Amino acid sequence: MPNLLMIIASTRPGRAGLPVARWFEPIARAHGAFDVSAADLAEWNLPFLDEPKHPKLREYTQEHTRRWSAEVDAADAFVFVMPEYNHGFNAPLKNAIDYLHQEWQHKPAGFVSYGGVAAGMRAVQQLKQVLISLNMMPVNDAVAIQFIAKQIEDGELVVGEILEQAADAMLSELARVAEAARSLREAAQPAS
Image (cartoon, rainbow, N blue to C red; front, top):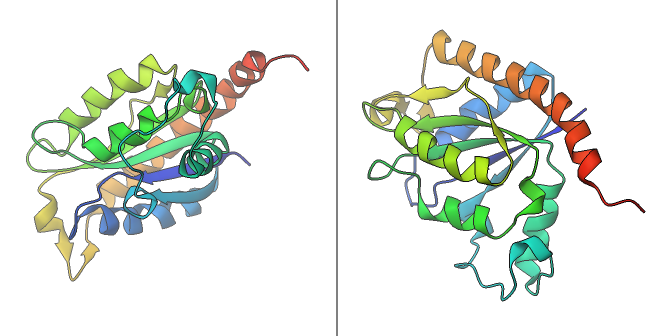
């Protein structure tokens, strides 16, 4: 079964990302197409990019980079649980992406975004440009949660069936693209 890595992008104290991720993770597991794991960027606490060589070389000098590389490399697909800050995606997410290069290649990405009236979709559109430059495959199906502060009660995300259906559709599309992308990744591997 392919591996899905859910990346929780927000690192802010009191963030909505944790309730959103706690809501999404059991849906992803129940979907059944992936082995699901999570990477919380607040726990990873990656420093501002501190590698002296370009990530394309994969000549990492820092232990945190080697661990992050292994985590991302093991994934076949990603879901970014992400906020929208000032009409864009947040700096810790960009930093985490910039640490690596080949580990992201030819892998699909889905989005569970949240924010105000735009539900984080402006941030998603910006992030898609970055991911495409890494030869990733953002899927169109997404989960977009409007007015996030009103959707959290006692630390839990409370949303309706429509967002659960959106999550299921996104996961199904991610599974299809992940299967198709496997041959691209295999073809890109150097011959041994």
